[in-house]
Length: 442
Image 1: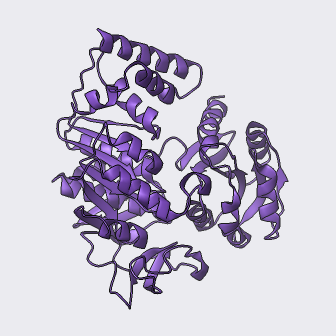
Image 2 (image 1 turned 90 degrees about the vertical axis):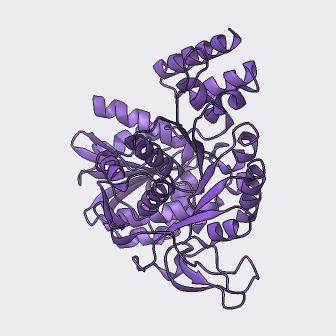
């Protein structure tokens, strides 16, 4: 009866929050934990086959959603935190909102996107059978510190699940080192051959070997520290790739071949190739069909601000998350790959979930925008002046409008090229999504 009461209360709170225009997921999880601190352990143990956790700096939400949908296409019952609420309360809510009122789950897999700093709070109650590590980039210095601290947080979390198997991005020297430095078994995905002509100053991390501190040698790299690397001193290297992506297209849409299966989706961005490969690696590990995964990709529409498209008053509006240097540089590459004229709005907040230290903006290569066909820039958010100043230092003029709703309305009204990109960091993402949906319905 107690469990039934908790489930009913949380479901009511969630639906009332949705009616009020809020996500409601985090609040439902918070209430569940207040009423029963062991509820996550009780519910997660009911998953029949495996609990899969997706960690990493960038690409967690898309990778996690692809994994869940692909497993469903293969006939399994799967729960997943689709909205990207990836801290303890969000994980608890995922289980609570997917069970019946008697607290019973009927699922084969749980696919959970998990915040790296929250892994150690989640793992004691919900142990992962498989963890996918998408990449490791510098992110939110006031929350994570440098990458070594992020690795320590991941290692602490995984200590609660000593039988967990890893799926890692072999092209990322830091992810490979993390797996190499644990006692866990791991499977790798990556891109064996050179695809992107990357700019030399793009690499911000991974210049020195984490094993012996000698300078690394790259045969090539795609972006940031992702590529084909080796240490001439100790021999640490990318090595063999278990799941290789080849024959890649990524300009107008994404295509990649894996195990003689052509995987095609209608969304773009080179970094999304890695998301597809991560999900493919999981499917191969679980003996699932890549052909059925292709049917998922053919209908997959990015949600929650991940390359989400809106059509408002004749203007195509593309909303995307850009929350750290590596992610922002990939957003800039995405914009420059679009060879039509465009306007750009950048929204930067400094709330707790964003990281109150915005010095990372100076590590982004905004000067690349000068080579692009951008007619107008608008900066917005709580740190709109910081963003305007950062653009000024690369000789880019912009208009500053603090309120994001006012900024979006102005940008859409004055977007004569009918092509608008809106790049936002974390806490601006959901409000931006909601407001643009409202404008689209009008």
